[in-house]
Image 1 (cartoon, rainbow over the protein chains, first blue to last red):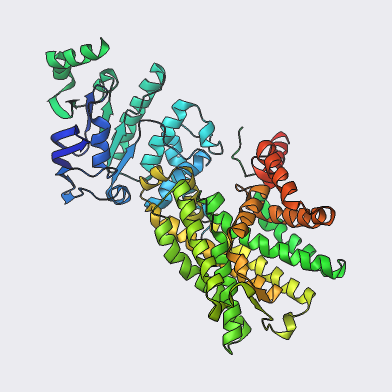
Image 2: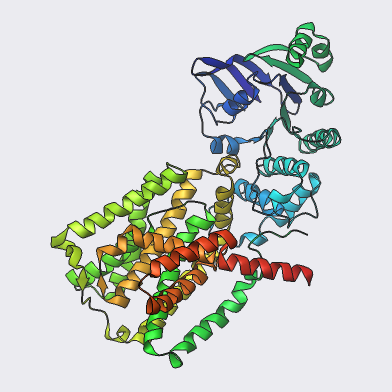
Length: 245
Length: 317
């Protein structure tokens, strides 16, 4: 589904992503974990068109998407969430999802329709899926932080992606909320047959649901395997221990 | 339940807008001509400010140069009427059309920048327009302006021109209301809130910003064209940054997150101007104090504050 070949990006001499290559299989949940500064978010920004790579190629469903702008990559079926709740704070919870759905349905340019009555069922369906039903009219910026993060996942789903890239979706959540959110992602991914790529700092968050885990360190993919193999990997343990100390 | 801001009773605008128009239509029977003239001026300012607010309040693009496109509308109508034999309505339509076309060119450059850089570039373009109007004496009559613009007999009386303006503002507001409540309008609001996120739901941010800029430019030009017919004269000062500042103040005064904000703002602005100018020559000083008080105590503007109160009351009820 997604093929990344020798992707490289550096900022004023510092190499953030160094010759990263990997492939994602359709319908699977996988993760990339790594300590702070490992290059995970830069990798996501390259995949979604937010940044242009210095070299390397990205293919999605067989088509080259390297260097395309984010809105085109989104239209091709890649959705993403951000490390911080990245929502439309002064729009209602309902409208947050609705604008994404309208864009997917190619209705955003229309100036003659009344938006209030558009995609109402679809919006409510997503709100139900992410557990924010009943908060439709609430101003999104006033939601509890955990709910804002769920809403962001909802906005991502509104674009009807085939591949979802989640950038530390549980950061800032309480342990309880984290568990709930991870389960939710798993459930939605199964129901909608989504391919999901997590990036996480905290290994424990993703070990339960990922079929495959890749470890990123200093811009490189440094280990790859099942969660059990990664957990047992001595070098991975060293990296995480070094960060704790 | 916490409600979304700006969603109070203004949501029923379509219900009472006809009542408002009906009331306004009755005013020529009770108001003296001088007041009617003032009211016409206020309505024209309301079209311009609402047009500016399409990008300012709805799309989050702070323009410091709306007067440039307003002047393009006014001068186009004036120049067509002076130099050609074309009928008034064609000259009148040419104003907003040319303003829209110029907005495509100006906007194409401006949407490449954001925040204060966007604001400064819009200011620069409007000052270029001002300089052309001021300097091209052979064509625009420079600082003398163009006076004695011929308009049809039917529109020469103050009440008739008031009705003409009322029809134009009625149609303009209805169209702008439709736009801000359309999917495009909602997408503009998403853009205002978070351009980065909007791009990641598949929106080409620059194209949408440019579209909003052009729509706004068209209605600014329309307001200019109506004002040209009202005053039967045009001057380079229409494009000056002082005029842009006036439109911005009107929007802030009324409230930028409410559709009615700029209309309320223009009503209060023109009214204050009239009242205070009668008492003192220091009207700008008083205006300055009013703006400071407003920003400190009513950051959502007058209409914003009223809508907030109404929303709270309907919540309690």
